[in-house]
Image 1 (cartoon, rainbow, N blue to C red):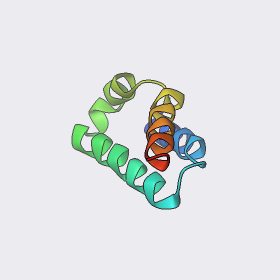
Image 2 (image 1 turned 90 degrees about the vertical axis):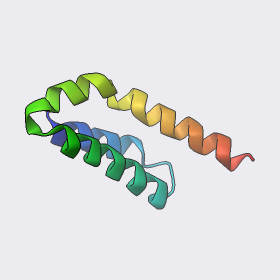
Image 3 (image 1 turned 180 degrees about the vertical axis):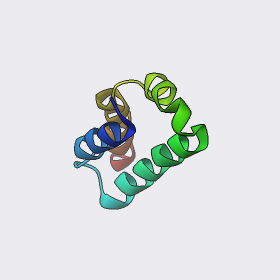
Image 4 (image 1 turned 30 degrees about the horizontal axis):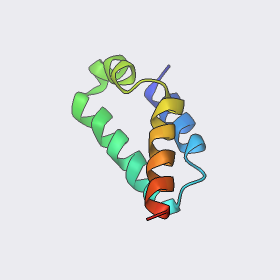
Length: 68
């Protein structure tokens, strides 16, 4: 999987959280990729894990904070 495909999947999976939170999350992961450099793209993808798992973490955090 490429960085572009990873980020597109993640963005799609994060559609149920507010725009601001989604943009912050996407910015964080884009910076993660940028810091690692293009030569480490696959290592970053492996370290982050499946986009569905990453999005689930954000969705659960959003649900938890919404109920506080």
